[in-house]
Image (cartoon, rainbow, N blue to C red; front, side, top):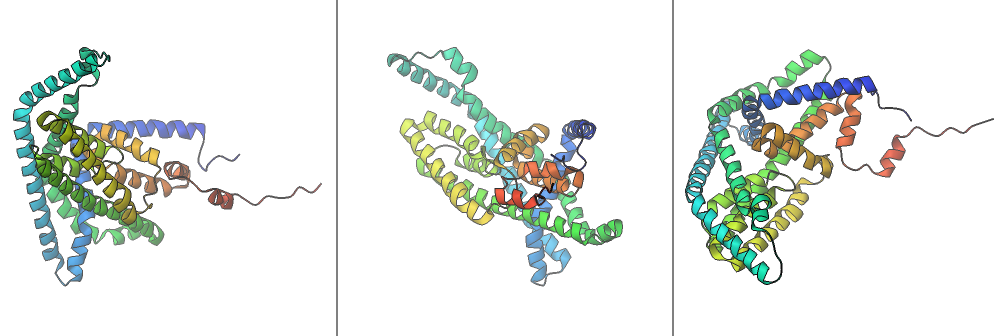
Length: 358
């Protein structure tokens, strides 16, 4: 069995050591790296409306100002919602925690009456529902802290957009005949742009439907829970679950079991509608990542970069996979990161069998 090109034990050890050093550097420089990465992906996201305005006849400068004006308005709106909602909820959190403790004690008493004995200390240590609510507010607070760097992010976006037009010529000058690599790069940017665009629209729809659900039920802080659903919908696989848990707990404490059941069912319907029917229809299966890699990338980038790393875990992993595919020595890693390979594809890639003549 032939090893992948460039694969050997010594090369593997050197690659692992380099990977560890790079990850340690990224984690140490997260406060500087996170605003830059946000700026890059915001620039990718606004590239489509920027090009559309130019196609409509607007000069590049006017189109950029228009897009950036909408971006600033969105950042201010999100920052205001995050700051106001988190501050209001944090102020009432001690009273909420006390009511939650009373509700938990009542549930444990009911279970004890039914013959099921659960230690109150065990619940407090390992299954404290207040920790889920606190985690949600910490995520929102972390996003609010990132938005304090909004001026730096905005300036970086401006320079990225100004430099983007001349990047292909610089790349050709640096690499010579680089049309193939530029085509791969453009395809990668297109995939990330499509992913970010569709994910933003579906996240907006998810947040809006959650706000409507919360207003219908009559729970406090509907904008907070809608904003949390919008942000965490960017987190693959488990984001919607994380967003639903504190909201359902809030409804359970405030309005009782029946209302909590309605809200839990509403979250389930919204997530099935958005995540099972709408997103796959428009996003397709073009991400090129296995389900396990998507989940592991969520854990990895969240550990390295914090909440923003969780939100950008899929685009960052797609970018890394494309970079690995561009070199023969690392293409095998990109294949391992990819989705399931069909048997026909494997058979076509094998060299033809040779008959033994003897």
